[in-house]
Length: 119
Image 1 (tube, rainbow, N blue to C red):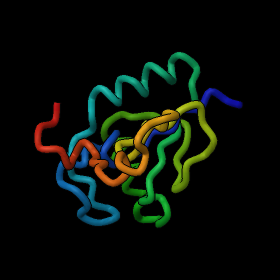
Image 2 (cartoon, rainbow, N blue to C red; image 1 turned 90 degrees about the vertical axis):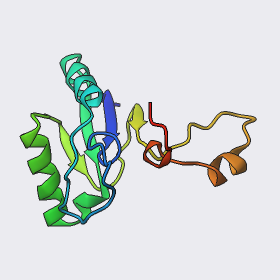
Image 3 (cartoon, rainbow, N blue to C red; image 1 turned 60 degrees about the vertical axis):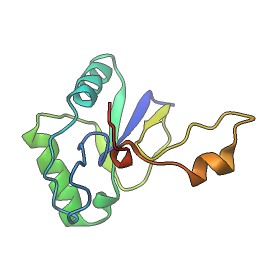
Image 4 (cartoon, rainbow, N blue to C red; image 1 turned 30 degrees about the vertical axis):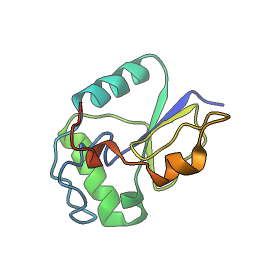
């Protein structure tokens, strides 16, 4: 398997502070720490793929490409669906561990953007 890392777009690369405003509306700044991580990983030989449901539509994919280019972010590919990878970086994910209270964790889950006090 390639050393592929998949980054979700909204809420990870795109800070998504404004929430959903339309498939081609991407108004918020990128997360600088994520951009730095992408650059470091690519320099270390990892393949970086960006995943977004926006990419299901041509206008959404074009908007993501424009956004990445505007902010100087180079990636190795884009997809509307998650490809096989070593790891996924996503703001709407739960890292499963045996013995955890999975149902309760799912029912009470909130992405970082829904939490009042963001660190």
